Image 1 (cartoon, rainbow, N blue to C red):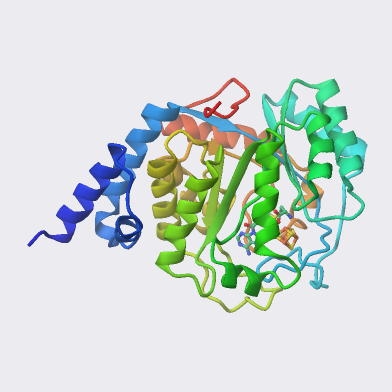
Image 2 (cartoon, rainbow, N blue to C red; image 1 turned 90 degrees about the vertical axis):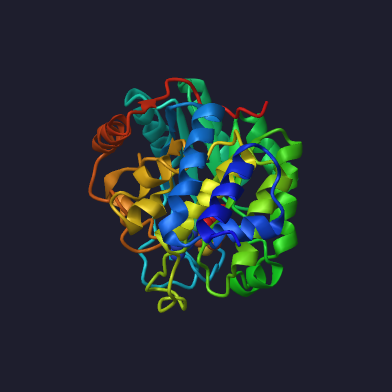
Length: 350
Ligand code: SAH
Ligand code: SF4
């Protein structure tokens, strides 16, 4: 009879050597006891080095509006949250923020927001056009669901990438958490973005209430099926201003296992060490970078708004300015023996 150690060790090696894993095998690895997780993390780290190298890509995150018409149960920006002061950056302010990011050495920015009706596809296209005409930055959008026509307008304006997490692959759980939106539409949006030739990022939260390890395995398989260019995975962190305030939330160890499994399954995708991981543990992002991740998204938003972009509590870096964040993260990356990439960090799948 094989010991648990042997089972995990063999399966990790199998995952590393490209033999695609069955759902049961993925579940076995995701259920790995904490004392053996290093076996999975080590092969994921080795594969990361082979597939995407030692360079870490930085994407400067611009949180340009916390106004949202949707009501996702887990999120502090949901429209029914009355405890949040709302803000939006003007078109010129977003462009200035992007220019500042470029002057700090960033090659790429992510424009993220709630679904703010003021920021129509046309307005977003104007901003993208403004950034593209005044910088050499790669631009990623993460502004939620739009029609294919709208996505096309933003692409034509020069947007390179789009991040839209499916949040969970389980339809029932998705519907329970998104009272005013539809799982099928979310997935359709991802297909539309791919058809429009965006580099597409998707992903999910770990530890949502009602989630099982089977659902987590399905999440990973859906990322594979979508053949995403980027995979964003982070713990669910209960927000005190939502109905889910008293839920347990995702654990760092489970999120790290999911990141490592994403690396083993998706091979050369870009995988961020997410801010939510850094918010659960001061070393969370470093641990993710040692378990398969190769991207970090430091905040470049103006300081006065950082606290208000409150998806979840205890978000890191809300009192740091963009220059400080850039130096701080570079120091952490060097301390891991890694370097900051100097290129745009485009998808390696094309
Ligand atoms: N409105 C856009 C982008 C902003 S939200 C959208 O929804 O796609 C960006 C991500 O924040 C979401 O995809 C979700 O995965 C994450 N998020 C929201 N609330 C969270 C919470 N309480 N804990 C952890 N992550 C959260
Ligand atoms: Fe709005 Fe995105 Fe938060 Fe949902 S997750 S409430 S769409 S900001």
